[in-house]
Image (cartoon, rainbow, N blue to C red; front, side):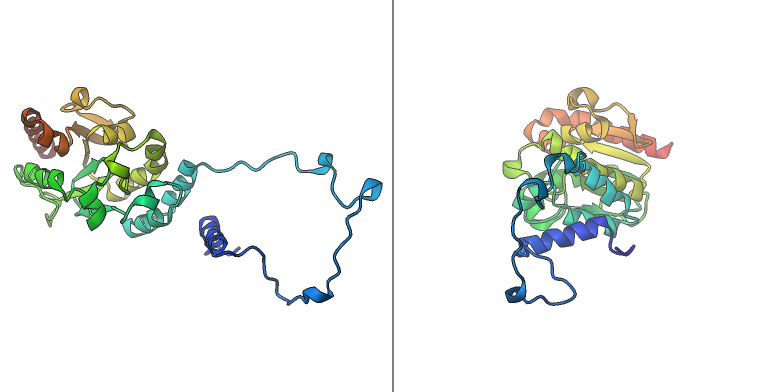
Length: 262
């Protein structure tokens, strides 16, 4: 195996061939099957079947989905490579029911990186995070402190992504196993962008990054993860459902603005 054809690429190529119906390897020299005599099965003391005791006693350990994600993410040196790696990652069942991979939006040079939960219907269709009603509210919220995803400088720019790149069925919450397997990609995403701070929108983002839930208790309190300051906030969708939470969201935005000025 050459250095340019690593384990992940070889495995993906093999799975692709199996899906096409390939069930036999082709050698360098063609074989005339009519001339090949079938080998007779020998039983008894001279049997050509290896006894049970001769079988390998060690079963190879199968890598978990999170392990595979970690290997793939670790080999990505830029955002384009990370997106491509996520696109070919087939361990997460959500991929099969989604229309598009939702990777990120905004300016990678931004000082603030927003991490949401998972794409909804609008995001799944457009392939971008936070473009539905909640996303429109998100844009208005940060515009109030002079920040936007279309900002051209690190001072006024935002960079936005989600924990899950694929839409869960019926917009259900991602399951813990789904979050766990995608966490290595999110961690590498944060490392590549290297923002000054991270804003976590909602419980799923807090569960993934902080290992905790309970956004009502967590919001408004600065903490840290991945060696970055972290601010948990109510998800904009929660503000649309309960307008009384908007005062808390405004306080959190002012806290972010003050933190950036330090």
